[in-house]
Image (tube, rainbow, N blue to C red; front, side):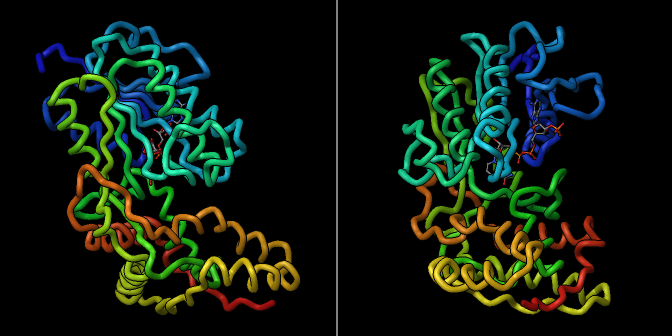
Length: 338
Ligand SMILES: NC(=O)c1ccc[n+]([C@@H]2O[C@H](COP(=O)([O-])OP(=O)(O)OC[C@H]3O[C@@H](n4cnc5c(N)ncnc54)[C@H](OP(=O)(O)O)[C@@H]3O)[C@@H](O)[C@H]2O)c1
């Protein structure tokens, strides 16, 4: 790396991008950043990627581009997911020259239902997020002779204190547990719930950039693999963290939610709910359907980079969520009535 080395991080205000920017700057790498909204700064640009031309300052050669833009919601219509996860990638690729070290962030779940990214068919994926992220990976392969693709599972906060710049994705769970939106956990208690800290991703991206562009396409898969926490254990950690925080703040503890397997749910509970719950209750109950597939995973991911244990960082992340979302964390769930 020379003093003139320029690195661009897209999606820099997000859960992952913000930590990546801090890590690269801390490592002494001149780093510029992009987000869709926010305020411009000396090294930060506002650019709606895929919707408008890049700001003039971003044209020219980049030594490295780390692409962190995404919309991680599972329930977007297919066209919207493609707009959110593929179009901005095209815009990022348009800034890269042949010598640019291009790093594309992806998801461990990108392999969908068939175990790889090759199928363009929507049916091969659980939801539009997986499908559009797989399309994005195929685009990187098609457009670049070389690139790093980095996949990882659920993202939790910093290892030291659980902090995150943005609480999205998995953090529906503590919110739903406190407001009573989930009457039961539709999950395989012994399933695997793999996760990583934002620090693990940022450290890995820093190492990749330090090692220089790969020859061809290099895939890293971060996670705990077969050492991942079991779903039941992870939910207990979430409950402990919430109840410890609630005890310290004088709020009644939450009860442990009952487990229902996806088969039981779909065969017995859902038909009952459809018959007896009102529209709002039904909406709440089914809003979490999108996550069911992820709470019943029994085959571990084949990780190439095994991250340190994630139990403590999950506990800290949930406590940190409670501290920064006090109104939600103080809610007392009301019992469900049909
Ligand atoms: N979070 C997870 O649990 C998780 C798990 C596995 C993989 N991943 C992957 O990790 C990567 C980062 O995700 P994340 O969780 O950090 O996402 P995030 O928190 O939702 O952040 C998304 C970032 O992208 C920016 N952005 C979105 N659309 C844009 C556009 N059209 N033009 C410019 N900027 C745009 C956002 O800017 P604004 O803030 O201005 O909107 C924000 O900075 C993605 O590849 C995602 O698929 C995430």
